[in-house]
Image (cartoon, rainbow, N blue to C red; front, side):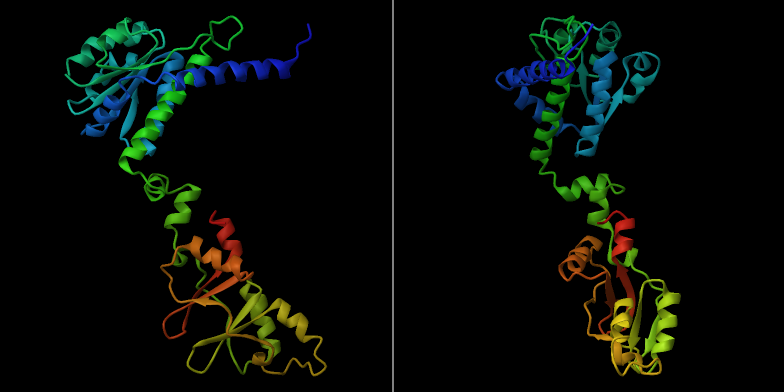
Length: 321
């Protein structure tokens, strides 16, 4: 049997998109109260659910936790075997069940209520077991699952996920959660590296350095040994004054007066771009490197003494670029 899979995909996306659009026109009346309850929570937002709802719940708990709302996922079955001890009197519980009648979830609801803490339900049926136990409800209602049998949770799980994400966004805005806050929870991610890695963390400190009077032939040896394609020049007071790159050497070969015995300073690029703040964010230093179309940015102190060098390749390797 042949199938038009592109059409099937399109129909699936449209069904799920329509579920989202319909829900956007029917926002839960309890939403403001739900946001206020979670904001006032002195403990954690505990998310629970089983099956597909549990998988969605685990993702939402991770989203809440990474966006400023302390949260973790609690499996109802594990809760009945000791993990109820993870719930404290300062917590809020968000329970997810589309039908509102999941047996494993229903079994822990009376015990959750013993803690006398807010219980938020995500369900389609306010009169279900979950609906009856809940203090506040986020309605999850779809007219059709994307599943051709209208059985497998598809549209309903997509809507549950989207509503949970929307709640997380509400909380982020209410907390004035900024990019810097997000990065602090993701120090290993690209954003974290951009906002926390400083020049001093990635700059090279073992550098090939010569004096102004060093013969060019020795400068070439230093370039080769330094492995950054460049040698740095300092004056008699050890102050940085210039550099010679591989490109400078190639251009020097075209000089009719070229000699390997000539002082390196004759072929150097004098007063190249530098920064005098090793505490600068590496991402900000990268902006300068891109602006001036260079590969090497020299880091100096207030007296022009060399502290290190920031190479474009190192920024790429560290994930800054």
